[in-house]
Amino acid sequence: MRVRSIASITLVTPSIELIRDFYVDHLALPFSVEHPGLLSLYGSDVTLNLLAAPEGGERLAGRTTGMTLRTRAAGDLAQLVDRLRARRLGVDSFEMGVTWGGARVVVRDPAGNRFALWEAPNHRGDLHLFDGPSHVAVRVKNLRQALDFYVGVLELPLIDQIDAQTASFFADTTNLIVTSGTGTPCPPITGETGICLSVEGMESYLSMLEGKRLSVTRRPPFGGQMLASVRDPDGNEFMLYGLVD
Image (cartoon, rainbow, N blue to C red; front, side, top):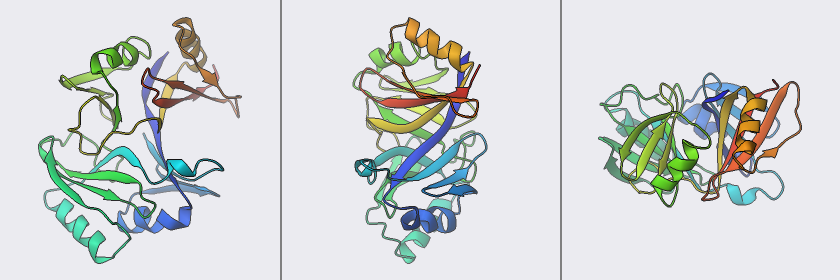
C-alpha cells in the first residue's frame, strides 16, 4: 500500500464553455475526454479536470490554484504570453517575475483561476505543459509540523526539502510542493485543493490512516473504485483514489 502520485488536479469554473477554448485551443493542452460539466486534459499519468461548479461550489472558482505549467523551450514563455495578450482572452492580470531559477508569469483564465506559466531551462526533468503540470503548491503554516503529517501520517515519498520552508514530493511526475513560504512560481492553494492522490492498496491504506487516528471521509465505492478525503492539520483537503482491494 502506498500513494503513487498525484492522479488529478481539478479547477472549478462557472461553465465549461467559458474556459474550454483557453485551455484546449490557446494553451493547446492535450484533450482527453469530455462529459457534461467536466472536461479532462492530459489523462496519462496525471489529469487536469475542468469542472463546472456544482450547486454551492461556485466559491471554488476564480482563485489561486497552486498549479504551474512549465514551457518546453527557451523563448516559449514570451511567445505564449504575447499570443494570449493578442487574443484578448479576458486574462486580466500578468505578474512577471523570476523564481526557482526561471522566469514565471502568473495569469488568470477566463474564470479567474490563477496559475503560473514558468520557463526554467535548468529544470528539464520537470514535466512540461504538454505532458502535465510541473507541480502544484499547497500552503501550510509550519513546514516542520506539516512534514510530520505528510511523511509521518500519509507516508508520501519526500523527494527534496528545497529550503527551510518548502518540501517536494513525488518524482518523475507532477510534484506536490508543500510550503510555508511565498517563493513558488504560483501562489500556493489552501483549503479544498482539488488535488487527488492515486493510492495503491486503497483499503489497507485507509485502514492504516484510521489506525493513526486520522479522520477519513469515505465515499461509497463505484465500479470497483474508491474515493475518500482527508485534511492536513491546516485544513487543506486532499482526495484519495484507488481500486477496491
